[in-house]
Image (tube, rainbow over all chains, first blue to last red; front, side, top):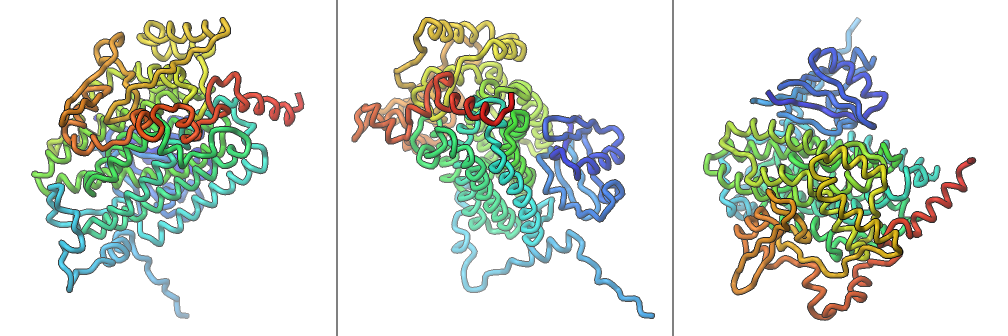
Length: 89
Length: 504
């Protein structure tokens, strides 16, 4: 199995986003590095709008992720409700 | 009472269709071939351009909105950096060498990439890639501009920043990045996308930006950290574009597979050679290090690269041809490049130094099988020369590789005590290479690479005919910006100014 990951800038906004990702992906591993935070998981990772909205306390547009995104790995699929990352192997 | 119905917002897929696909039209009075003359000659067959879709489904209106937000964040920090003597917050002035190298080699590459994407955005016949390439083109010029702007704050105080635009074309180590991007820009549109979008952005850009920017943060350089992350937030989209494009080409026609494979082999190797400069930066130029080149390679090269190529195996794509040679070189390249930069430090627009005692301990720990055995004795020789009042310089000119343009200073993949050297004769002329990988690239397209502009041979030609002093002046290689860090104005000034702002 291959690991997918998403790396975000470490800041006030992404603290809630990372907490939301952790809730939706109980097996994901969170790694803190200088100024950035990496969330990785085997094969599949999902980032859900609803969970982020609950954590962040306001409406959230999935494309807002663009602002704090540093990099990611895996095939991307995004719509208004979720961003998923997958490897097919 | 009437309840006012709010109009339903378009969903992302629908919006993407309307604001991207719907912008295209069928030409009526001109032939497709006249409009897109360059999409066929590379041999890539496309049957249905509409199959290409941006997985982020980003439309222009959202693009401007989020890019503007990134710019506001960026300038808030750049202003604070300039207003608060941010340049004195870096660990020490040795760190400046890393960002000088970045400004001289990478920022002009961003600009080249901007031009390249503007071109291919015009040349592709599908509206999906046209829009995505246009966004990337605008991103790339933003990167070049924000980088230059961030570093202009250092240019007020330190040497080596002022003439980066000319130096990009004139110095021996900057010609490495220049030749990489010139090679891509003079290729066809599909090869350009594999070169920059896939090989550079997807496979290698993490190795450049992520540890470098994290390193900038760790070394107190808010300005660089900020432009880095601001640029990198676009890279995630670029990487995704690169991956989508390769999947698109592979799914359109099985005949595309061998062509794409050849480009992957070529551009992976060329990218790895370019990144040897980043390897030296990570292992030697950051006063406080985040991770070694080997560790970064293990995460972003091996782990991530393997995941990618396992995924692409379903199309019949194999890992790049010279992957094993790269893997074997990882524990050696940073040391070989840094020893090279140090011995030719009279010809660099940044300062270099011999590793300190704590640097040496770190290098021993990170490279247990190679550093102490092969490279420490050479550094000790250089240190001993300094202690005896001398200086370790090599005033001979390096022999440059015809393909990657780095000096031929690498060793054989299986024998780190033997310098690698390859030679090919083409139309009565001899050409030199640093490796099998570079020789292979040349032999696929010799008629292209014989035209390469190489700084060392041009020094020997008209009008300079070997006049080193005249060449250094032409390349803006001023003595204040070159040489040993310990004797530099940058070091003396940084220490003086830091003392002035500190209360100790």
